[in-house]
Length: 384
Image (cartoon, rainbow, N blue to C red; front, side):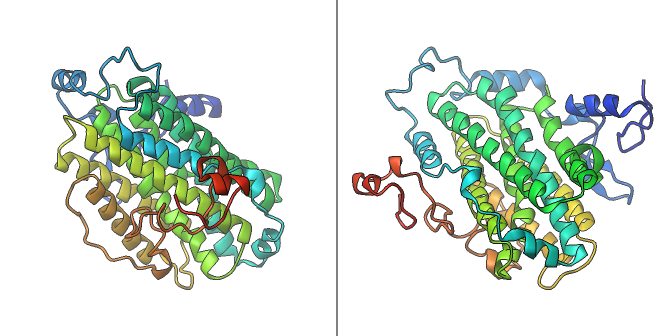
């Protein structure tokens, strides 16, 4: 048996054993443990993830309409939850494939970036390459099995396909930009090789494996994964767009950030349907954990300040996004932070404009649009 440090990492054993342990959701702690600096990092023993009375939780979940056994779950019609069905149709209308993104002009821009900028973006892409697979693991292992509402299952099924496209896209980006095979392999295995990426992945995986956390708590946690954990990295790539660099990367980022905004909004929608949601204090506790971990990631990934983008601004932006997510979940703000990035005002996951009403990429699949639009294949300027 491997001995463990206070941070929960194995100190001996083979790499294969460590990887297997990590994939099972072991070897890390959450909620309240002190980090090495002595501050509350939001991490503690995994047994306290649920932080609830298990008997009461089971009683509450047995009373949740979304989770009750449903003999009609195999048939979609008649639609009962029209709001969820609308989200499913929005997901269909925005589906895209990695082959539709041209990376031909990106390599020159990548080579012209400063070493610190390439390092930062490498960290961002490394996390993204693994993150969508983690989201899918939660959908397949937990949410799709627990939720009994066919409209929600339709959305989740489509979300799995969308996350696969995102994962492929990020892998293609790393494959295109990183020419050194050893460095490329390090980035592809970032959850094992890069501590700041591993910490984010570990937090998400631990919610998947938890037997104590309620469905509502896990719903909030994965809203935080797709809202808080992704937001800083999205902002970094949009910062490149502001500079007119790397059109393939920035276009794919527009598409992916729009998709993830939809996924996060859907989590908030399901949360509003819960009969026994977690308390506002518990929701705030989960979001605060995610903010702490994301801020630590950005500090390590971006050790050198760049023009218009530095660790302090990023920390403020993460707090701004977290406040928006809390409001969507019906909870008060924690930070009252202002958006420090003017270029993100209209494209934040929790920004003032709905991403599907004020899209940047304006990309839709034609088959879900009007008959006139269908005759023209697809359009870049049609609204839902």
